[in-house]
Amino acid sequence: MTVTAYVLAVVLDLFVLFIGARFLLQPRPAAAGYGVPAEQDGAAAYLAVKGLRDGTFGVLGLALLAFAGARAEAWFMLTVALVPLGDTLIVLRHGGTKAVAYGIHFATAVVVLVAAGLLFAV
Image 1 (cartoon, rainbow, N blue to C red):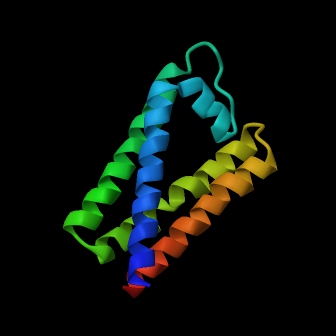
Image 2 (cartoon, rainbow, N blue to C red; image 1 turned 180 degrees about the horizontal axis):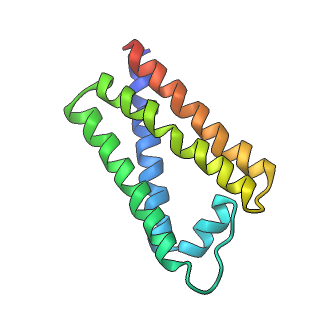
């Protein structure tokens, strides 16, 4: 179970780092994948903020796992699960599909919470 907990945590941290990089480098396609396409005028700053936020969460998660251990990463994962839960509501409130809201964002929150539980068990 220890290997599974660590691998899942690393994969999730790398994935959110990738998402952050995508929002910084390809903001419009990333926004479409998020579930709420970006408007052509004026949304660039907000997309960059999302990219920076997600990238920072990915780096922080990796740093916690490497330097503070599984318990610190578990607390981080537990609290950061609020982000995909909030993303679920954002997609639903702004015209995104239920499939994206629940199939991507809510499912991500569940996986992050499972990872937190596994890390707490280590």
